[in-house]
Each structure stands twice: as C-alpha cells, then as structure tokens.
Image (cartoon, rainbow, N blue to C red; front, top):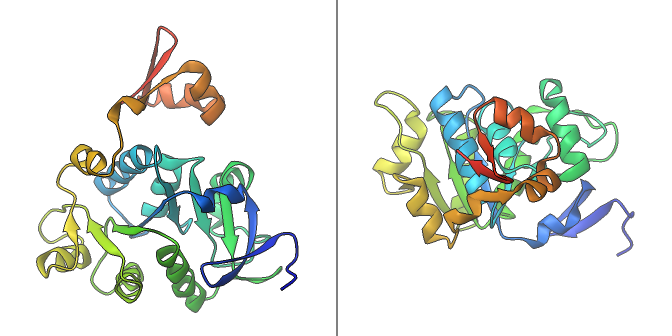
Length: 237
C-alpha cells in the first residue's frame, strides 16, 4: 500500500502524523480523564506522567483537564491523538501545547485535512489512545462520561486499567472501577513506578540534559517550584 509521506499504518489504523514518529516505537501508557478534573487529580497526573516518561511515551487526547496535565508532565515524550485533522487545532485553548507537541512530540489523527471534530470522533479517538498503549490510567471520571468509554475500549483490547484514589462522592466512575475489581488503585506512585522498572534516580538530570529536553522552559518550571537547579544539576520536585 502506497501511503502519503505524512501517513502511516499502525496497530490497524491509517494515521496522519506530525512530529517524532519514533515515539511509536517506545512502550506507551494511556492517561485519560475528566476535562473538569480537580486540582489534586491534575497535579498528580502531571507528576505521574513525568515519572512514567522516563520509560514510557504518554498517550492522551489533548483535551483540557487530565489530558493536558498528562501531556505537560511527559513532554516531549508524549503522543496527542486528535479528534480532528491535524491542520485544525482543537481545543484552541491548548493551542500552544499542541503546537509544541507537533514540533517535539507526536500528533496523530485518522482524519484528512479540513476535518472538524464531532461528538463521535472523540469516542473514536479514545479507541486509538487505548489500543496503541500497553496499559491505561483513568485518573478521574464520572460514571456517565466520555472518559468511561476508555474503560470499555480497554476491556475490548484486554488492557490493564489503573485509577487514582479519590475522595468520597468524587470521580464516581473510577471509584466504580476500583470497587468492582475492574481497575487497580495507584496508592503509591513511587512504588508503581518501581514495579515498572523506573529508577527514581532518573529524576535528577544535568543542566545540559534538562536544557536539551525542555529548552528554556526549565526556568519557568523553576519559578513554578517544579524543579530545583543546584550545582549544575536539575532536581525534580
């Protein structure tokens, strides 16, 4: 089959792409969840994605909330699966993040040029996110939500599912998954990462390594308290 140079066949899908296609060759984890996620979930996801990105490429859908936190935490080791064609950036509020992923991460889509997102394309996108990943983390989701469709795809594709612990009366979907044995709860992020062979020592980079990976964004990260730069080393908090 002769495909255009910006299109590939992968995992049973024909996909248009922008960015670093080599990210598809790495082990991958899907991180998905609510657009209206709380601060706790978003901050935890960002931290977890950063830790996992030492070994895994983090796959998500570019939406507000959990998706955005997952991409930011793992950047540039992240894959954005778009509900529209790649010439249409959606959502526009994540324009800067998505354009950065086009440059340094990877964006993929089933859709040709000038294809706007529809309700059903978000669900179709979710099946790609799940199928190309080795396992799935649903960080926060209400019981009747689009994020729970990722659970259905994970069951279909026989993917292991993890969820974050949540407070009572919050995230009814992930609590349902945990209560009924459909998902394992990530009680300790460090223990989880160790079980995947991720060494916490990798949370320390030389300044040059950090600059090569994050560019001048590391100074913004320092101001935000995400990292500490000391004696030529970058320590992640």
